[in-house]
Length: 100
Image (cartoon, rainbow, N blue to C red):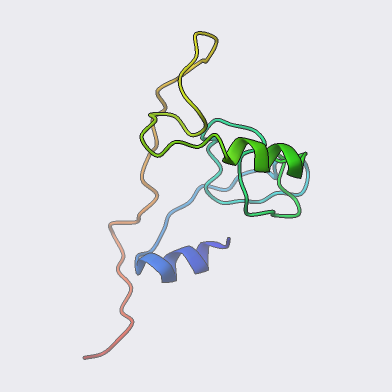
């Protein structure tokens, strides 16, 4: 997703720092991991996080909307880390999409 697409979607300017491609080809703008390989059903061609479509489907069946984690329940071997995320919304600029 490009910066421009995100800005249009939220109707705000973004100040996103330059970053290197992940795994050589992925230039996803907001690329913080949320924690589970082979768990996204979007099927992006260059995604580093999915390597096995059958495993993706198996893990998606374990999703519990009431669970505090993405897939399944918390196990004793799980590692959960708090991450800080700085807002990339540029509060010094605004987008004017309509005159009236």
